[in-house]
Amino acid sequence: MRSLSAEIIFFLLVFICFSKTSRAESFKIPNLKFKISSTDTPRTDEEKLLYQIEKKEEKAIKKIDKNCAHHVKKINKQVLKDRKKLEKYVEKNSQNSFAEDLSIYDPIAIGRNTVKNEKNKEAEIDPLNIPVTEEDKQKAQFYYARAKQKIDLEDVGSAINFLTKAIKAYPAYLDAYILRAECFGMQKNFIEALNDYTNILKIDSLSANFFYNRAVCEVQLGDHLSAIEDFTMAINLDEKYLLAYQGRATSRSYTSDQHGAIDDYSAVIDLNDYFIPAYKGRGVCMWLLADYHNAIQDFDFIINIDPGDAFAYYYRAISKISSGEMIDGCLDLEKSAQLGFDAAIRELEVSCN
Image 1 (cartoon, rainbow, N blue to C red):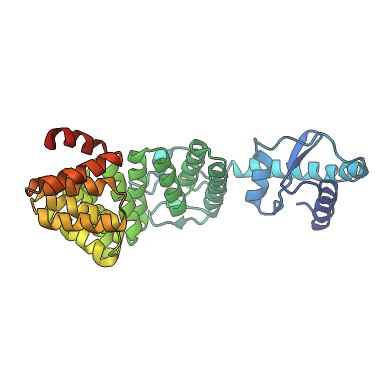
Image 2: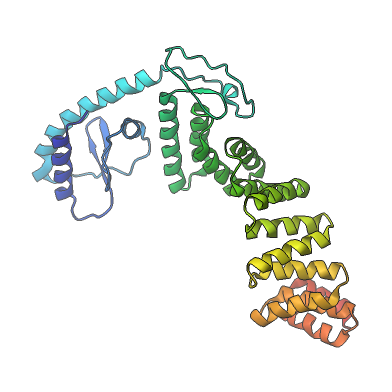
């Protein structure tokens, strides 16, 4: 659209005029806002569209150096021509074969093949067996780029809206699903994040990370049995996935499978013998099983590494008290209480008066 020489002259002039500032700035041309980027100029169709529909720009610089004004006037004509070309492009792309009903693109309905290609273009069958054209993919990429911009602006809600449009255009767009799931996680919306990871796994079922992430959502929702299954899938795909063992151990403990939890915590320690959360979890499971001696050993290890760990002092204390070591147990309770552990303060009043 815009000639290369015009671009170069234009941006050189702007650079000279605004050399005092190091960040990207915007200036106002009559009837048109044009954003100057410190790194790129719009070249692809998606970038030009982004330039055309960008609604929120930085405040326009009120005055332009008089020495550059006559040059900007010349460039203005070229920019206005480009705007008309962009408008034609947008109009053309808004008429492509792109179903508006999101339910048609529901990735859960695998095998559904109802999208009509009005232009009779050769459609590519994506992994979910739904016809997708190159135009659909371009739209999806454009919406994905917009979503990333919104995330940079900490506007997660708008990012989710753009990602939903990207998925609507291209139902097998893995990156869009992943980013939207992360956005839902930022909002603590674990139900929608879980749904996205379910769809992600229909596209790529060989990634241990995706099973792990879905399991984390299930843990947040209190569904520990499903979480155990997904943690197990992650471990089957990656036998050294430390966090998957740790997560499965926690869920096993919640479902009263203390022996299974101890096995998983021990597997974590085998992978990393300084991973403190595993010692804490295993110690608590041993205490629940009345294996006070081994529980005390785990909490001893933690305290030797971190003498300020109130949690470890508390559980070592109640393990000692349960095994008959009242004096040492009360001393540990007092230390835990001094470190601000509320449960230790309450236990002191009950056990050590």
